Length: 395
Image 1 (cartoon, rainbow, N blue to C red):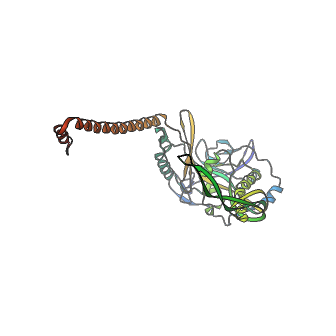
Image 2 (spheres, helix red, strand yellow; image 1 turned 90 degrees about the vertical axis):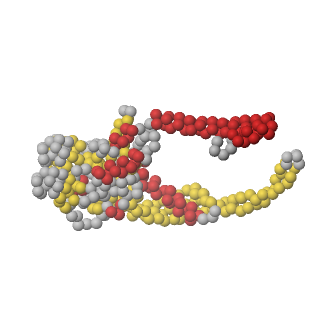
Image 3 (spheres, rainbow, N blue to C red; image 1 turned 180 degrees about the vertical axis):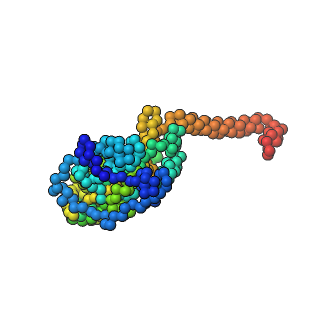
């Protein structure tokens, strides 16, 4: 449906339940749209096409209109207007799902989506396991498991394919061994001449060309989530991605990309660089290698915008927010955790007490043995016999 608002026409989809008229949402793990009220399920609309790669050169040559920073949604259920920079979200008043039509917003349209597979119960189970494995975490961390504010979000990512050809210069190192003579001085001050084998390396100039095809180099399309956390959510089953269908977004938030495809390609080239350098080292051969310069040309560069599913849970501890992410396909959990100072202190004190007890026991045993030995040596046969009986079995 199309609603006219102050910011211009905004198109978004409505998702009425075919049975009771309420709104349906995409149900993780089922692949269907489910009504949270009557339980009726509806099939996701079929898309008769394959996931496609798009020519990057054509994108770069095309003038794209500047996308508005936000757009207004008018809820088709309650009529409330919500201003947002998301591609999908729930109405802040009645909770109905709203999914924007990307066409006309001046944005690159999503090509594929990896639908949610891990539902809320499974997400909480993964969080529970993660919390239990956090040593020295405060008890407040347990609240993240039952946090109702945990929400499902599709995060935009770019994937890039490229055919690369790299010319390099460097050096090839080949090891050889030489016998070295050296002099040592023994404990009596006498000099001794000895020999040893020492490894040396001869370096030879090297140059050549290597080629490699890259497929689906993944680059985060948003800066709202810490890059190191996103990287640790990998690997993603990208082969299971499906052609983009707005129905998959119903009931979830979807962030718009804020990393443009041109900037994303530069990040992807940075990901390709160490792989290419390893190819150069293998091509150089020898025992060790040095790569001085690499010049890479890229051809047949293609891209697509892909939406990946993540559960995001946030919690406060000591006035500071912490964020935990769950891969909604593999249930992998990554995130920030606070440290409990008092738990660490108690553990350190317990360790010190344990060490002290062990030292005391060793010293006491040594002192007791020394006392028995001294008494026996001073006391003659009668004393020794008495001591022997006192320290005998069962005492």
